[in-house]
Image (cartoon, rainbow, N blue to C red; front, top):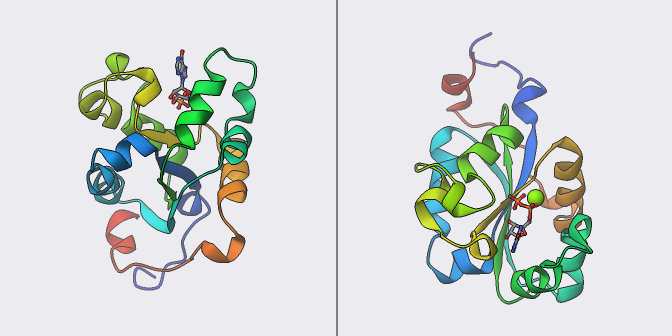
Length: 160
Ligand code: IDP
Ligand code: MG
């Protein structure tokens, strides 16, 4: 029924989203979280982490060999990061839309990077780019017990 509907598989889709050290230093944590929250996505895990260089290299494993890899992993491990898992229908793909293009100057206004950043190496936020990377990144950053499944009263006003 409307009152006690089960969440569908689509509504349980999850993405790994991280506010990088520049976003934390610039005081953009609340601003970024608010955009995912207002869309209707559900926060199911969050913590402040200072990643090691080794951990940053694991996170960006697919970019090993790129000329910016060393600078990128130095940067990710340069300070606290807000690591999060957001849940909801289409959150992986739509999360990338909320974030904007990799290069902030190519990001549309209205996106997080478009509104809040300039340089590609200081683009303030990370988001999983597909179901497989989402699964891998969530497993890398979080223990299973750190992910919370819960109902919100507003779920029934977000999904039909
Ligand atoms: P994404 O963060 O939009 O998924 P990726 O291609 O996965 O972009 O690259 C990961 C991160 O590496 C980017 O967010 C950006 O910070 C950095 N990066 C990507 N391309 C370049 C580049 O050409 N120069 C410097 N940094 C880059
Ligand atoms: Mg990426």
